[in-house]
Image 1 (tube, rainbow over the protein chains, first blue to last red):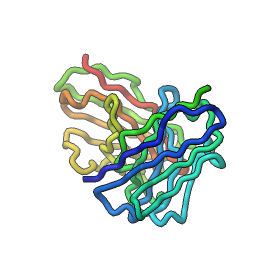
Image 2 (cartoon, one colour):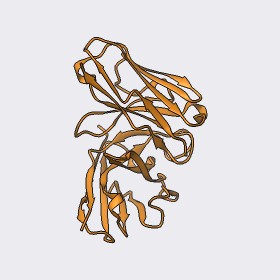
Image 3 (spheres, rainbow over the protein chains, first blue to last red):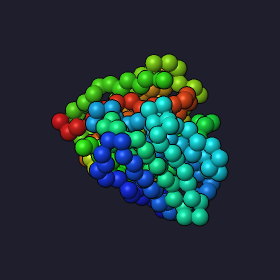
Image 4 (cartoon, rainbow over the protein chains, first blue to last red):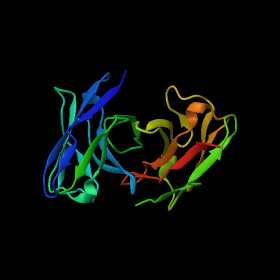
Length: 123
Length: 108
């Protein structure tokens, strides 16, 4: 059974940093691209970042470019999101999602999602 | 960015009734690269439909998707109690991926 489990959320002050993790199981992690998607009551679902199966290609939403870094550790079947210079508007539930192929373009969608981890940016 | 507008915002129906949800794109969605997800309170979104009309693994055949270009529809032929949830459309044909704001299907 495909499972992805996020961790690392919490309360952080504006300007601070946080690293989210997503542990995957039930599939060959190194064969799939992965992504982070966040959700807020006001803005709904917003795609944040994606990484190819090889880790060689990454892609970011304009709203987080230059502040967030996505990475993977295939030996641990784990996806990460390093979030720096956090802002109040980054407050959201962050979901880890598997992409339906090894690369994130070419008609790829999110086929499995984790339960999410809450990030709150507030002083 | 492609903006997806879902309607109605809320659909109040009874079990056994038919639900028709709409998703309209601000520009044509490439190759009908449109997906539908279901989300229940406190849970992650679940993939229902991809490619506008292909059901994902394990999705009952009461769920069907249709449409192309800028207009897409998710139909639930006969609502079961477990179908009351929020439904989102998402396009994955153009960068960046974008989602609609959701349609809540509630029990009347």
